[in-house]
Length: 200
Image 1 (cartoon, rainbow, N blue to C red):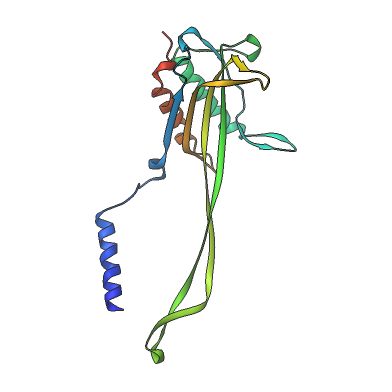
Image 2 (image 1 turned 90 degrees about the vertical axis):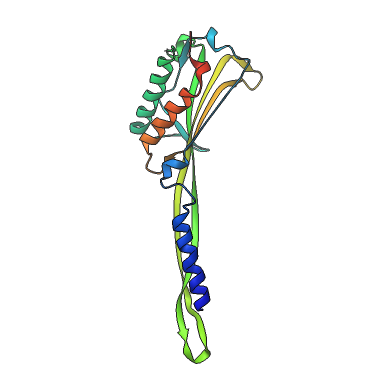
């Protein structure tokens, strides 16, 4: 037992000297972008974007939208970045060159754990377990914000879907409480690392 305690204490001391992971949840944020290298962004200059952000789909009720107080902030940041790159936002009725559609995807992870109390059985010569065990359940919700630019003139019939010209994905930016600042930083980064979207 003494050897076990000494080994465990030494291990904890080593972990303290050699941290093996991020200190803040923001350190886990990832921004990914990709684009169609054959698409001519320079020949376009207008885009249309919805006023809501879809986060789920209910088979009975249809699309489920992000709370508008959060969506408005994110949509404004997207529009600001597009306009800074030389694009002009127009209504969908005005036949835009491209469509920019944002969507949120979330998932919840559950952890189930249990533990026992220690007890010392002096009459039996060692340590043992106290029953019954204690159970606990915890969870966290993470999500991604997805931005897609597609050209409606390149739709594929008969399913009438357009191939994406650009995709931006911000992993880990949306939580159950919608951490807007992290999402805003992710939006800015997605456009910053996509210089081909800037119009001459």
